[in-house]
Image (tube, rainbow, N blue to C red; front, side, top):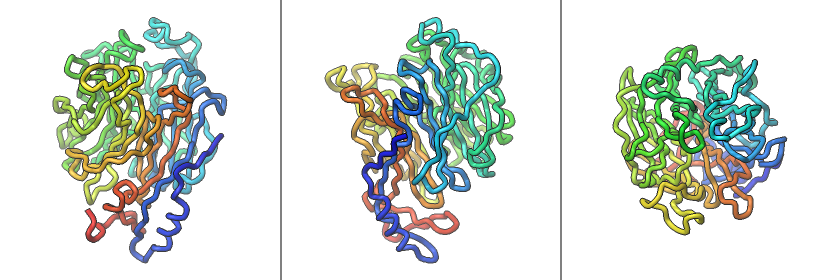
Length: 433
């Protein structure tokens, strides 16, 4: 497995930060480091896609993805692989499979009807993890985009319980939408302050493109640590105003409401946002009518949103910030529903609960697609696990899954910083925003 370190500032700067440690706090210098965790054409797989990453309560990093036997699409033989790091992302164990359902498996009829796969292909898809404040790691994944399973780990991803099927939760949606295709996330789910586990989901009746369209967006949630799951209300439905809403990421706001940040294929090419009620319905019901965030470009790709600090409001978003396509020979803004090229992966930081995004910085100006965010609350390190290209002129092909580790000082050019303490708390630095 290739491990190619790029844009390396880390070791010397981390050493500088360590030297600056006092009994109460440490202030770091700007730092960015990148490491390739998966490379196409290695390990028996043609390509690795759909990255997800979390940091457990004990500080272990879990990076997971879809490992695809061929490049022909989302419906071929796919496994879910995991790598672990116990030293803050510096070194990683070997990849291993973590999704397996025993017994006979049936291919999704929606895929067969569109000739998207062979009957003997087995597709595990859309892995999602949630870190629980009690120390557990919850793991959800799908089989053939028509069955969903739940598992958990109590040892930081060393082992997982036998998967339990929770497709019955999705069956509750059928009275409103006759779905044939289901998907969780992908990326990460969240745990609310109340303890509720929340995973965005999308559904399709499988009749249009790639059997993933038309699509509607909702959530599933658990209030008993993953033992049982319930459906939420639909937050976004396919319409002329919001075309094919699908892959969605979630963040809890300071007032207890939940914000969904939604991918769609609408001609305005902006991310859509919907916000739930607060209280006992937070993250489940009372969704606002989706509205477009004019600051968040939508090239039609997965994005990720994450609260990186509580005491001071900081919410981070990442996706490819690009509306140009070689295939269209120019801008597609407001003119087409065709995807733009996935490149210029860009981080945007908000200090006002995702209302505005005053900080904007490119993490990778080249070919880059799906991405997921996590933060180590003890060190203040922020991580982005993302698809990176590299096959000549093929702008949509993923060659690597790359992990970027950086700090707030790098993101803000030294204008903001998080000061970590032994307890993992944060205090505001004098004269810093």
